[in-house]
Length: 194
Image 1 (tube, rainbow, N blue to C red):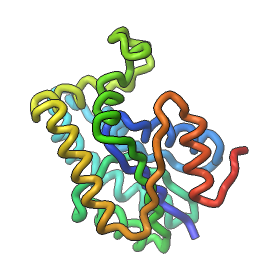
Image 2: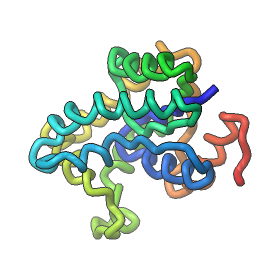
Image 3: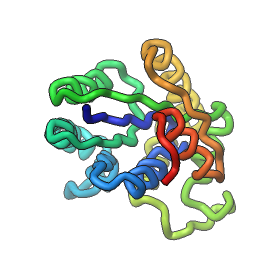
């Protein structure tokens, strides 16, 4: 049975990094990073939310089609709304696949600090050049919605969602150690590093 591996968690926790790491070790697995897909829509920089609304149905269709052909998909996406999450679960179910949920978490304060350091050299504020192109838009959205208070609300929403998802597994995301976090994800899936 194919699986939709949903990596959930707060912004900047390492979802996209771990998804890329996972598919590098698992040939044939699709990394359906909706934020990457969003950048394929003209004008995404000026209306990030609208681009997300446009690409979400296409992402759901792509996920369902890929799963239906017997291949796994990894989805690195923060989802805090149970109704939105149900849409992805329905796509997996319609394809005869299993939804596997992993929540990458840290403390609220550490998660916020990591978000602010994302894409900088050791938190100094100097870009590494490897920052994903949508990070600036996410930073702007977070700032416009209350900054650290918005990040705290997201963290609380994820914790509430966890209480409704009995099969979800929480993985401690270790800052600065992708390999340790990746190993914990693999172990939770009954896999070993290749």
